[in-house]
Amino acid sequence: MRVLAAVSGGAAVALVTADLESHVAAVDLASGRVLKRIRTAPGPRSVESSPYGQVVVAHIPAGVVTIVDSATLTVRAVLRGFGEPRYTAMHPGAPLAYVTDSKLGEVVTIELDRGRVVHRTRVPGPARHVSIDSGTTLWTVLGSAAERVAVLDLADPRRPKLRRVFEPPFRAHDVVFAPAGEHVWLTSGARNALAIYRLSGAAPRLFATGAPPQHVAFAGERVYVACGQDGTVQRRRLDGDPVRTTRVPHGSYNVTFGAAEQTFARPSVVTPSLNEGTIAVLEPGGAIRFVRRLTRSAHDACIALTG
Image (cartoon, rainbow, N blue to C red; front, side):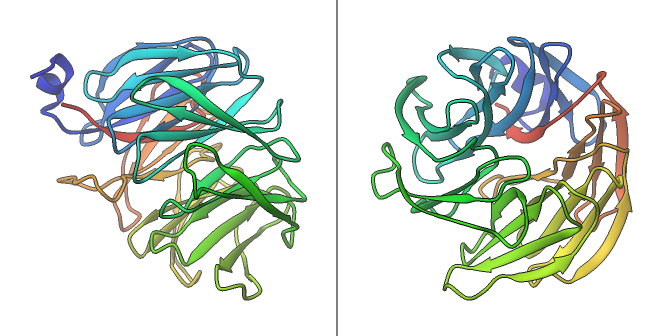
């Protein structure tokens, strides 16, 4: 068995960006112990895990993307030629990643197993947050408080095509497909609001929520909405109704939960703090498991399986 798998028991770990210190921290989800610090290019800002054993780290100031092996937590490849790589969506049925480049106005397709860029799709704006359904459609928000959202067709998953652009009911920030693929949640970069779209074409339902910008993660029928400016994580139902609000460190903007194909002995909700450099780990019901300070600033996190 590989070294880190022996240390962690082949368990799930949280990978947390240390934005100002050029590394990604691997954290045990039960204890909060730091298992490893993975040295990277400067400015790791976002991190996303693939069901095929890779982790993608995007570095805005360096203009590079790092691919990490999730089993050993070692760097496999460093890809250059990006302007401002922002966020990543993983194809659920193939070892492909879609990385948004806000400076170049592109969605970049990466073959994870070979560690190479295979296509660049132009979009009419600075693509940032991005999400994918079961593998046929991808949405990306064209800005931090965006007036437009782009919809891409993945009929050829290696060569996405721009299908259409639409205007959301507010300046949008984050976008996330619900697990069943029938709904898309869109958050705001400027208002205390979120919208739930039905892919059947009905008008979106709007809900009041915490301060912008908000971010969303799903765990089955549970939805977690992080409002970092307020220092809260809301647990909601799939219909949008609120269930519980938990206080977390100020600046805990992003939020994540384990991918559906991963099996955890103890499922976890993870939210890192850009302001405090902490990671807060919550139980699925919303109670705080622990808060640990890891670094000066932690922008993003994901959950990956080692071993």
